[in-house]
Image (cartoon, rainbow, N blue to C red; front, side, top):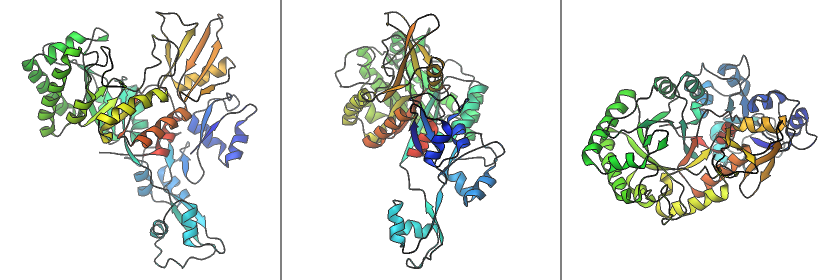
Length: 470
């Protein structure tokens, strides 16, 4: 997979020729509605012929596997396809083998070096027992280099058939799915969630659903609601029993606790509550994780941060999702949603107190459109990455890229003369985030939130990682 940034004068057929790629495959992978209307600065993913294939109308897995000389079973395994009879147009598939025709004078060692493999890997893929016995014109299967294995979580707020459709489409990319949310009540009961459609979609794609509980009440995270639970042992016992009963009834496989704006004086109460949760859920076979605010030090002040004890929670729970996004929040000044330099600041602290294999880095699947000059009290509009490109095209603006934040942005003037500033995500910014996950040796990545069209993200994700399925 290559990433191409559109230059002035670029046209799509020339881009395809530059990469030796198929024009229609590029259009499908990027969900390009008008191939003649590219935007300068727009990022495109370019499928590599022989290494990736984009599903087209009329395709089936038998045809694709035959075309590339691999078995249906191999193609299904590499791409986490649970039902070989179901494919989606625009779905980018990894091909487990490319092919090399042996030239005069080539040795197996030279061929292996060229593709970044060992001699044994090529020999095994081709059932070669005599390493010196390869002939001119012989076609060798070249296995795709192994990618690091990672875990991927995705939060979703679309608890309906439309949300289920998205999970059927994208579920092969996820280890976990986190339907948002069940809120706790002051009596230890939980709010209801009509989550049957999305749970069915998760199970169909071998995705482990996580039961998300929050202290959300009256459209906000409620500190008093958290305090009521964290300061009462009897309520905690009732709540945990209700959690276990609901998880077992609905088929959840783990618990994710997202208590935010917890009073600083409840820091130890929160830790003790987590210990109790783990002691009761682990024997039932459930994992326990938490979502924590993005702290840059253990002494960081503020209601959002102080009760989130990185060190203690890193010891107690199975893994932690760091909410490394929302610097560019809807009520604040225009800024990148997840500037990579700030993400690194959080991780630099986190890895000193939380085992790296327990850290899941948060990443946004959205952007924002602010009115400028920015005025205190105004709210930005949340947009999808696809909408960001559409806005730039509509108003004839080139997309710029901030190297410090590793994020695309642009400014435009609307029909009413109002100036705007837009920050969003693209293939480049997501590649930067995946590079950080690998550099820091983290457990994985967690997306907030599904429901925002971003077709370029998924092939970039799979180009970097093998997704763990439980």
